[in-house]
Length: 170
Image (cartoon, rainbow, N blue to C red; front, side):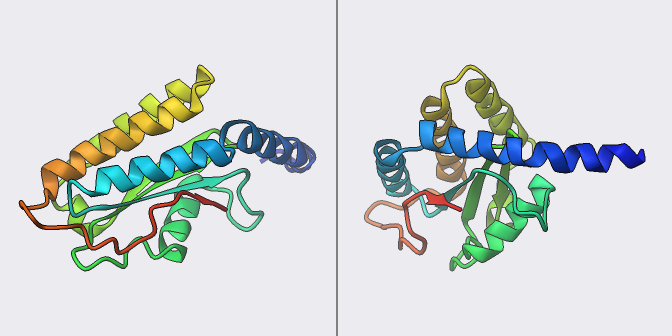
């Protein structure tokens, strides 16, 4: 890397962090978070999967790579801690315009890996159009459809609600 590049990136980082905070306040207020909470709750009634949405304004200084950060958040939020390994994390890194989906081993055994990048692209397109809530709800519906196909609840069987339904702001 050219010596001046690191210096430029350090100067631009506060601008990106400010931008991420602005997007967080503008598009993920209390009313939107409540609607996402209800959407997750409704989705999880139909299957045995657990969906977690994590929204972060800007990545912490120790970890700038969005995929590695999503894996860290997956562990920190214990998305892996379900009886049948059916947790899925939708991670949104607003400042860097990054979207990651991390699925537990039970889900990856039953869902094609190509599904997740398609959902991320669709969500990124909605974000670029300024349709944040609509995009997250569509992504949630797509994740729900995959979990319903892979881990449907039997008649009378209820999801154990192993993880909280409310989206998390980091």
